[in-house]
Length: 222
Image (cartoon, rainbow, N blue to C red; front, side, top):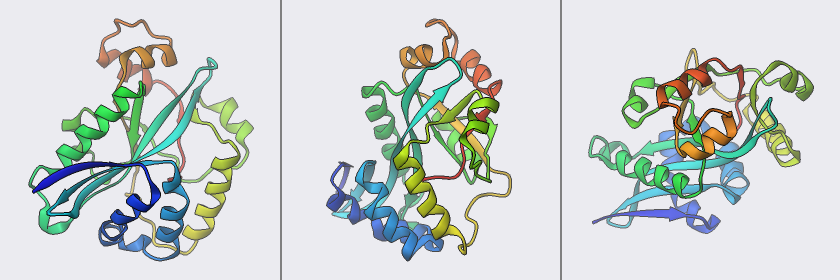
């Protein structure tokens, strides 16, 4: 029997750790321990259980996105999209992602993003490639705000986590694809219009084109 779950409590989220370490073995150890103890305090995990065992999942990690016009909004980074090897190609991830989109729509999220290993996997779900991904973090945030149109807010908690993540990843194998990109899926038309300043009746294709024309800074941080 298959059931979808939305996990908000950290003890529930830890049920997915075995799948995380199975699919992302390079993260097993200090990084996955930190991730589940710290980052999972405020994220959402959508998982599908088969006969009581976690078979597929996606993590919705919250960030605040800002732009040059002074607008800001909560968005989600879709992270750790994973299915147990023996359960793949059964449509489980479609169920997990569709539930994730439903949650974000209810929250009025303007858009979500991910950094794909393979862009073709996410195109059918309405994701569009809008920008290159910045591999090397820019340490001087004033350079970010002066040179980019869209960027993630770096508050005290963001900086704390980023420093820990940098330290933990220093000697780890690079998990990013060769030429990483940012893919975006629009969620709430009204919220996106407020954030972008575009008219409410703007076609989705025009909104995506608008994003492609923005200088976007998103560096590696879970």
